[in-house]
Length: 426
Ligand code: KE4
View (cartoon, rainbow, N blue to C red):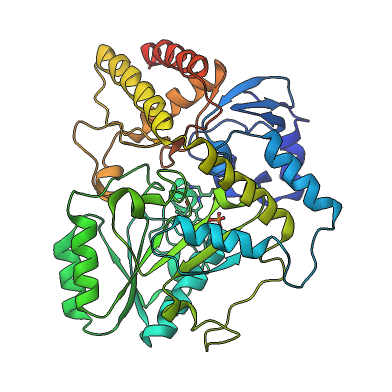
């Protein structure tokens, strides 16, 4: 989509840094001018210049039911009738907490916040307070939001814009963050040998999806947890993206691995600002006001976000869409594999239920360095070719594509057709 001099984006550039309120929306790594969305319905975005797009960004994860779901909308409307924020406990917070506890194996108590960044930042502070240790381990290419200690070789927008180690993060703030290659148990063992009894937590996306989707080796997560626990270190799963998406209880339900703490977000807000973190009671009770670890938020547990999130979770319980989401994901994957092989372009297309991404590589992609040695430049023509023909992919090779409950066979078939036409031109 070509922008003109007085396009909405040109106007945005005058008042918002980079014209966007979140960098990954700026099309930085694939070029071109971002379109503005007028409204969204189901699996479609309708742009301000009148285009209808099949959407695989899903507002970066929350829209598992598609956009503007009527039941989520009326749940918000009902809550809205009673007001927007009270600054006191409200009648939606406890049902939400109880629903999250019922769904997520590791969670016995949960605290609501307003973003995934807040969730991981707060969970890390809790892990440090509980263990009375300062160091943490994170993996290259994983993105856990933009708190200082975690903006070290981070994925998603940080990677897209080539500043995985952000300016403004002081050496001091990053000094306790040990950075390891994902899927590398030798590096994990070495880190623990070199930092005996000093590591508070290992934080990871159990299915990293912010450098593209990089799945863990068969035994990686179980061995990682074993090594961490042998060293008195907590495991913190960042399931902000995968929670309630790959399974109702996230990766930890899918693989039967129970971490000590879990960060959540996106889906549990039904499209409104939300985050959450939870874990064993003995750890969570270290939080203020009963424990020494401070954490707070004016709009945490906001009734509108709780009402929207509760309805989103209720719909997942009611419809149990995961097998169908996985079928549609695999259908899209096999169509793309066929088209790329016909074109003679080697690709890897890892998937999880309702999630996939693409790497232009002959070999499986197991780590950040594998990602960086893939032929990322081929993503740009794929993105723009699809956009021109009405399919909106995430505007970065380092993001996961999302399929929603609203994507029907027709939408997937249309996408496969468009993909095969575009792939012929790459
Ligand atoms: P937020 O602070 O953006 O709500 O959540 C941060 C976060 C934490 N953990 C994981 C695993 C995440 O994927 C995210 C945010 N995801 C990106 C997209 N991959 C958000 C998109 C954006 O930055 O605009």
